[in-house]
Image 1 (cartoon, one colour):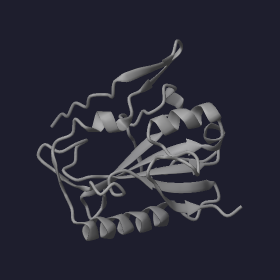
Image 2: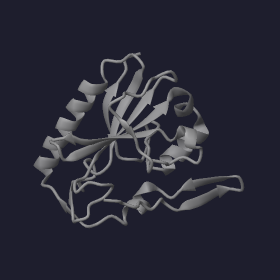
Image 3: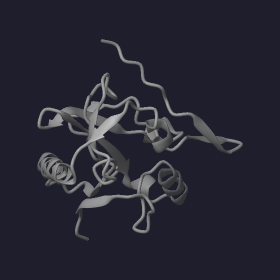
Length: 180
C-alpha cells in the first residue's frame, strides 16, 4: 500500500527564512479519531515513558527527554480508516535533547515527515512502529546541544510546538533530565 503525506505549508518569517506552519495546523487534516478514556491514555502514556527510558537510558549523552502531543492534550486515540502516517492509532511524541556527538540508536527509522525547521540538517526525527502494545508508534525528535542553546532556533522550535525553554507555552511533560 502506498500512502502519500502532504507536507505542512510554509509561512514566511523574513525575506530569507521560511518555517512550516505549526504542526497543529497540518495535523488538522487527519481522519477523525475516537479519543480514549483518560485512564487508558494515562496507562498507555506511562507504558510509553517506561519503554522510552528503558530503550534510551542510561546514556550520558542524553540531556533531557520530554513528551509532547496528543497523550498530554487528551486527544489520544484511534483514527478512522485509513489512519494517519500509516497507523490507525495515535503515536507518542518525544523530544530528546542530546550532546552534539550523540549517535541515533539503530532501532529507529528516519521519519521523512518530521520537518519543523527550515534547515534540513536540524530535522532529526525518527520513528519506531508499534512501540507500545504493538499498536502505538513512537516518534522521537533529537535536538543537539548546539542547536538547543541558539535563541533563534529556540524561537523557531517554539513556533513549531517544540518546548525549548522552561517557560514554554507548549504543553509538555519532562520524562528525564540529566543531573548537573
